[in-house]
Length: 251
Image (cartoon, rainbow, N blue to C red; front, top):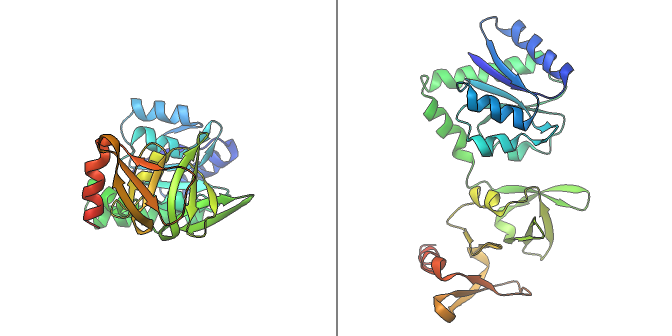
């Protein structure tokens, strides 16, 4: 087994290496990196490892950016000092989530989980990834922020998502506005159930269960009214109008 380590704290990196060597002498550490940029460079210039152990908070950003940029095709064990990223971690190829300081016994359990998955799918990595990514879409909750607190918001309660001043917000059925952890509406869109949510335009994603009515307007665009009044119209472009009508008719 070849493992790639992503960790920007030297003591934590050395602890991982020590634990791995003590768990199984046959495990090869294929390489290591300390930042998002270094990780992307390594992955670009080396063979895909069997497994990645990945710290989440790195010196130049969150390691989720590595997964988005490189489209990682191998399982990942996330390592962090915080539990607030747990929901986001399992949107990716995550097989375990370890909190720092990492105990060798817990790392051993995580590595055994990988081996059991590998055995179960008879070394068919594409099947492993299909299994791991089955929870990427249609998740039931999203982590949002209200003031200084992080909350787990039920997606069924979200009326719409919108972007403003390069930030992404969710508005729930009680007209409460929450800040999302991502600054990309596209990132949100990728994790949503396509049967429930529709990307109306560059600014809005709407929940079908809260659409009051819609109508055609100039040049075949569509104006959407939600059950909760907004200060501006939500307009579906002419290019997306046909897709919207098809989507709403199939719900």
